[in-house]
Image (cartoon, rainbow, N blue to C red):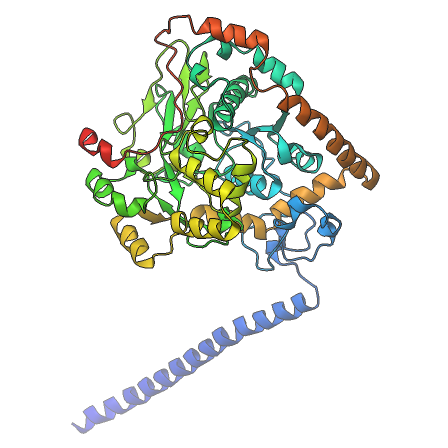
Amino acid sequence: MAGQHTFLKPNSSSSSSSSSSSHSFTSRLLLLLTLLPLTLAAFAFVLQWRGGITDPTTRWSPDGHEFPGMGISSGPAHLSSTPDCVDILGRSHNPAFPYYRDWKFNYDESNLRPKICITTSTSAGLEQILPWMFYHKVIGVTTFFLFVEGKAASRNVSNVLESIPGVHVIYRTRELEEQQARSRIWNETWLASFFYKPCNYELFVKQSLNMEMAIVMARDAGMDWIIHLDTDELIYPAGAHEYSMRRLLSDVPRDVDMVIFPNYESSIERDDIKEPFSEVSMFKKNYDHLPKDTYFGNYKEATRGNPNYFLTYGNGKSAARIQDHLRPNGAHRWHNYMKTPKYGDSSSYDIKIMSMHAVLHYTYPKFSDLTSRRDRCGCKPTKEDVKRCFMLEFDRAAFIIASTATEEEMLHWYREHIVWTDKALTLKLLRKGILTRIYAPMVIIQGLRQSGVFSSVIVSAQATLSKEKFLSSVESSNSSKETRSEAISSRKIGNSGESQAIARKALEFTETASHALAIPPLSPPSMDDCAIVI
């Protein structure tokens, strides 16, 4: 036993020594691991504080000095007199997207497929066109055909638009009108019911003529798809594997000629909206994206005393594959002279895509939209006369109110019929799925604005002109604008004697199967349609 104890003693001493050594090594290792990152962090801080290293994020900036939106630029100061630029030049010192300041999305398009273009007819200013355009550039649209007049055709606006890669500006000149007066559209009957009428009818014909020209331009530019949108509409490519129009349309089978985008309508919650694309997040879903029992079961509450479920149209917009014999079929659809186009639906490809993508329509989002629509139309504010000018009932009611009511009465009507002030009803319809929140466009456009993309485009476009040349061009633009407006107003689309004679002759022709009638803006199904639909 004694020998056994003698044997164990040395072993115990050795174990204790080994444990002590291990504990000492662990302590040193922990101390090293603690001090090393602290030392490196302090060293990096000292170097950066003294200007010894460059922040990697500044690689996004072309001059290598600052992240977009973080610098204080004096560039826009001389533009303060330009009303179109006032609301869109604001920047934030908090960077949102890693876009460098002078980025115009001028990337190599040779490997981008499919190539997508948008055509529009607009008289809007830069505060609306730039967010609309660059949002669609972000989601994959490369080319724009802008048929401009009014504010959009003014020199200070058009200079900016023409400086953006992929943008083609077409002015409403006498030459353009004479060229469109020779269009084959006047020889056919599919659009004839809209000829020689004022306001919205005239705009509808003008849009169709512009779309016809845009098809030719799109083919020459090598485009694969064409979409007609107004500048108060944004494509919402939900359902695709990426938030991308290219990805969405690349998934469409080759035998599909056209894709319909049902429209969602903006549902504003305030009467002081200034920038709808950045401030509106609530939308009312289209009938096509709702169960029938949900739609008709909540129809009256969703309508809120207005003439229909939507304030304006409910039949969406469409994208068409560029191909032979393509033609417009009104502002909402496309057609083909030689065949009946095949439209994409849930039976032809991914039902998930078809059940989610949409066009977001920002309808009367600003109080000033009441008077702006009134000022563009010379009809009398009577129930009978407005039928000549407007296709949809709500537009007629809004025009009469804007033409006859006081400012206070107009605001009261606007809040009652357009603004969603009843929070309980809003919450109920959100839970039912009739109303929905969509934030992606808002986030993208706010990020573009904060990154200085819009202000950069304006500054770079106007910097190409000397001050004297810029002022003289604005002055000549104003004078030519008056002359041009007289020429246009005295000669409405298709009002020449030759065009009228051709149109009358065309009405005698029998309509062929390929001449489907133009589809106007249509209201969603009403309660009268409930039994028919179900």
